[in-house]
Image: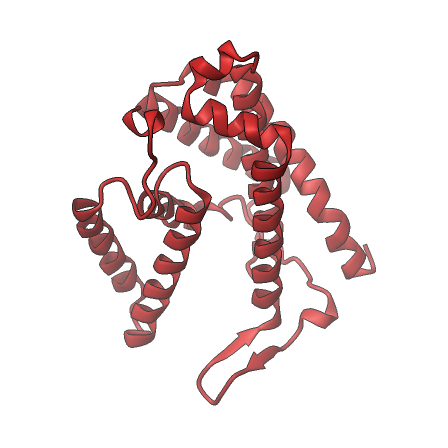
Amino acid sequence: MPNYTVSILIALPLAFAVTFAAGVAMERLVIRWLYNRPLETLLATFGISIALQQLARNIFGTQARPLTSPGWLDGALHLNDVVSISYIRIAIFVLALLFLALFLFIMLRIRLGLEVRAVTQNPRMAASMGIDPDRINMLTFGLGSGIAGVAGVAIGLYAKVTSELGQDYIVQSFMTVVVGGVGNIWGTLLGASMIGFLQKGIEWLNPSNTLAAQTYMILFIILFIQIRPRGIVALRGRAAGD
């Protein structure tokens, strides 16, 4: 669209809707048959990602496509002679905070969030209280997929759009969940913050070798897991035993 601001405002909810529907379809067709089988789930989703990447190449080609950001996102905020933050990254940070607030509102203030927490902690007890665990699992997977779609639009503002756009973030996402603790939004936030600060700090000390920074981060995660295998914020109660 000629107006890039309007284009972004339309792309964000549209990306959420499309990826939400894709996530629901994936959960109904594949994931629901693999619950309590994490290895098979990992292999299945990895295979689906490869198939989707190839499908994107067949439809759109292999040429990277830039996503033009609105003019008000050009430039950077200069804190000093060394540190500067682009307005695009600031906007993405604000967008992440908005989704964090929205997610907390859903989980703490409305019935869907209560049902999600109940199914996460004890699906059998939740089912005995009239909650449908299959429906909640489907909606939860769809919600996570929708948020990932919005993240794809945000990342596209400063990275060229290709079929492998999200591939570079798989390891960081996995490390965030492991470090933060499975099933806790505050643990995820703490894990993401710690990994982000550490990785950028290591890259700042050794800017010529980003691969070394990732290697050091993986070594740190291995050591961290040995100390706190359940993450920064571990689940409590029956869910922790599962």
